[in-house]
Image 1: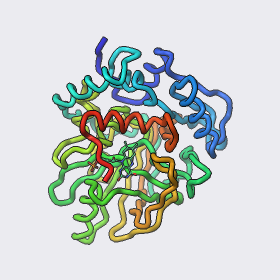
Image 2: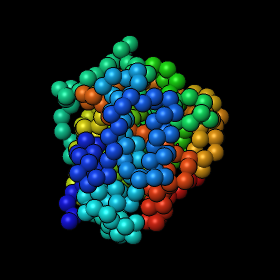
Image 3: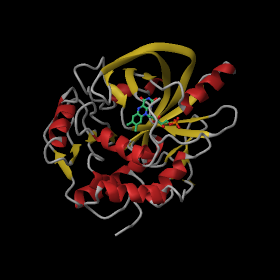
Image 4: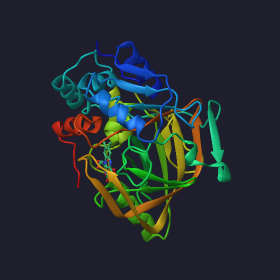
Length: 325
Ligand SMILES: Cc1cc2nc3c(=O)[nH]c(=O)nc-3n(C[C@H](O)[C@H](O)[C@H](O)COP(=O)(O)O)c2cc1C
């Protein structure tokens, strides 16, 4: 059966549940190391997606990990039938990428979301796990999307760039010099300006796949995500920055990357399992954040054998869309 995949995270969680690919963890877990260690043991054992439903210190928040940690689950995110092999998923991805589907734009709405602006913005309200004892601190962005626009051409980019939580309104962003995000930053800085950026955490999984793909700057990752899902990704205009964000994202943070500010970031245990720091990370200042009721934080435990990012990188490499430079 091939039907369109889920266009938001909650629909996908239902699909995982229905396919027996989700373990709900009802007892309280500590976001400091325990979420990651439980994810590592599950990935090395029965290997289901994990939905942590009680997070110590964060009433009503939930955390999803390991959702794409098996080829069959990546297949489910694309709307393929259950138990697809890596080869079947790769074939579907290759075929679907030929048929981009533009996103559909709704209207701005705060009805189903709780919004915090100005001095009410507090990123530390989010249940951000401390993933590894070797990490310098908690990482807000491990499986999310960063949205920016080229200040000159207006072209948008959707990418995945790791983000370290610093305080209520600050996070650091590590982007490689060749990335489209850095190209946008350089152009903004040439004009002496901060670069507007939105971050969406808890989105349709194929959007993260599309964001992680190395594609030419003019290729719209939202349309590639639509291709992967087989249906348009619903987006809406952000509230305070001129960017489109996924309509039903669990968490959206809007703000700016400061002009010509660079600070050291990390160390962070990266995909290779090696703690690495970035001497010149970008500084993100949040001015608004919004979330769905009982938000589901999505993050990834990485840097070990069977980590879900390895499978995703293997898939992206197999379709010629992986570039680590
Ligand atoms: C889970 C995941 C994490 C990633 N983390 C980073 C990162 O921290 N920094 C970076 O430069 N690229 C990172 N990438 C890769 C970029 O998303 C990738 O280079 C992408 O092709 C960038 O595309 P863009 O240049 O169109 O933004 C990550 C990819 C994935 C899937």
